[in-house]
Amino acid sequence: MKGDYYKTKASVEEYIQLAKDVNGKKLIEKLRKVLPARSGLLELGSGPGTDWRLLNEIYQVTGSDNSSEFLKHLRANNPHGEFFELDAITLETDHTFEGIFSNKVMIHLRDEELQASIKRQSQILGPDGIICHSFWKGEGTEIFKGLFVNYQNEKRLKKLFDNNFEILSIESYAEFEADDSLLLIGKKK
Image (cartoon, rainbow, N blue to C red; front, side, top):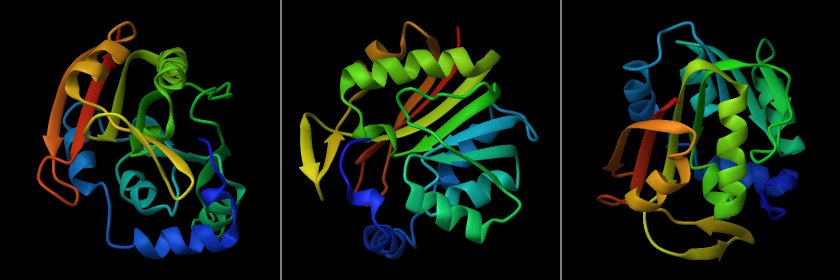
C-alpha cells in the first residue's frame, strides 16, 4: 500500500477512532457459508484488529499488516494472536492457508498490483482455497489522506480475478451508503 497515512502513531490512532464503529461482521457471515470453521485464515490488513477478533472466534486466523504501528497495536491488544508484517502485493510468507480475507485493503492497489496480489494469493492458498475481499464500488481512482484508492465494479473484478479464482459471488452492499461497496468471494482454480 502506498502512502504514509498508516505509518505514523498519530494517523493510526486517528484511523482507530474513525473506524471504531465499523466492522466486517456481515462479510464474515457470508464467508462462513463457504469456509468451514477452524480453517486456517490469513487476514490482509488487520489494522485496528476489529475484524481479526471477529474472525478469530471462528477461524484459526493469522493477522497481517504492512504498518509497523498497526502491528504494535495489534500485538499489544491481542497478545495471543499471530501477526505477520506483510505487503498485500508480494505476500512474502512460507505459510499456506485455507482462506484469505480482507476488508477494504486491496482498494489501495493499482490494477497491476492487485493482479500480482491475486496471483500470489492463489499460490499461498491450499487446494480449493477461499478468498473473501471487499472493495469500494465505483469508477476511477483518487488520493484520499495521501493514500491511493482504486474503485471497482463487478466487470473489472471478474476480469482481475478470473485467471486464478472461480468467482462464487460478487454482491453490492452498503457500508455507509446504498450500494457503495462490493464483496467478492472466490475459490482457487
